[in-house]
Length: 94
Picture 1 (cartoon, rainbow, N blue to C red):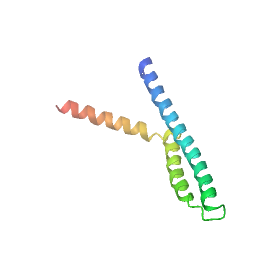
Picture 2: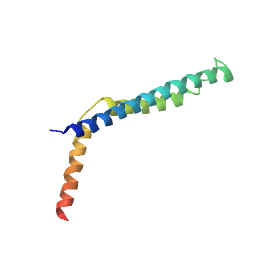
Picture 3: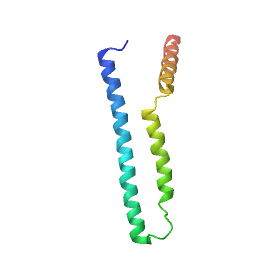
Picture 4: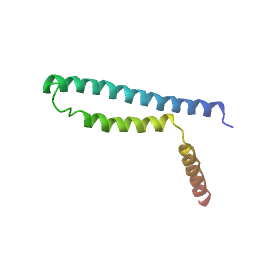
C-alpha cells in the first residue's frame, strides 16, 4: 500500500502528463489552423494542400502521446517493477 506522500507524488505525475498532452494537442490545433489559413491566403484555396503532410505526421505523434497518457495498458507499471527488481539485484550484488 502506498503512503500518502507516494500517492500525492503519483497523482502529480499523472496530472502533469495529462497537462502535457493537453498542451501538445492545443498547439497542434492552433498551429494547423494557422497553416491552413496561410496556405489559403498565399497559395489560393484551390492549390495543393501542402500542409497536410505536417498535419498527418504531427497528428500521429499527438495520437501516440494520447495513448501513452490516457490508455493504460499496464506496460509502464510492468516496466517499473522490472527496473526496480533489476536495481535491487544489482544493489545486493555489491
